[in-house]
Length: 413
Image: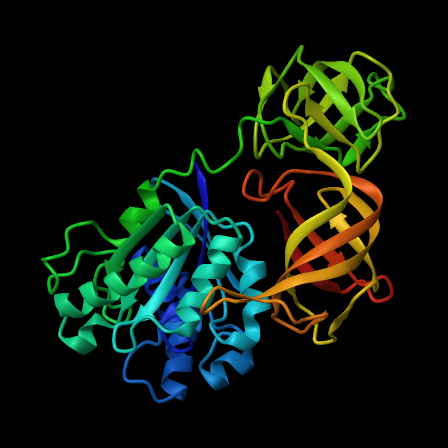
């Protein structure tokens, strides 16, 4: 079955964890022991009902404070699709956690409390979702039961959000009025909002088209591992294993190997079970080539047409994760696909005020949760595409040389 990854985002107490809990509960995706544990925890907290938010708020600190701090991943399936949910924090303090959880998502669910409307955090989360290239946005206008399921309140928030979405040039935005607590329009249609006829949240998630989310045009294959059996009947096998990052590769295709730009032809495409005639994202395969070329981890096999950019100086949007501020010309390890090189941030071109989309050009350093356009210099070339063209070959992370901490995530411009 097709796999869809989605992330939830919203301000504190907008009901993200309750929504996910309701989606799992009404989809019959909770084990008996999980439900019993949630019932006990709900009684201990003095709740009059089963607090479904406790299904995803797994950390003790989260349960005590009633907020999401870390990214909680949950898995469930329906007859139509498999799903991975990333329940991300809403508080501005945990923006870096949202970036982490949303980085691989096909869909972003943005929650809005109908009583508060579109607020600064709504703008921030939508901007980050757009920055991360999430192609589909679902705006869930929650707690409709607290405004007597008012269509006017729903339409007002929809209008306000669409104005901001137009400025960001978002292509696919959908709106749905819900009550996560009561279950209206989550899995079952609401009997209180018969004026809304675009389907439930689960129905939208099951049917949203994600086939065009991958780049099937420019062939990209970062080499992860060289397969060389030492014994057995296949001891002379030399394969290059990894995951397809873009395009379609076929047996017999002419390819170029970067960085040396040597050319060859694909002899075979192998999976764990069999040989196949073609491979495409996000398949994991092993290639053999007609020519004996020195290839190692960090190299990239690409198609003859539309090769990636190759360079040592790049511009990227950077989200700084670390409590320690970034300093210009500090030395980092840059990880890009399977390649690792040393790098420096040479310039902070501008920071972004994500509420107003204003560019602030007075910064020479970044602090935790800052988002900025920077110029990076690497010691060796990397092979990349703009992030909007390919989310895999257009993304990078910066790592501390001494501690191996992830310092920042970047999207190449």
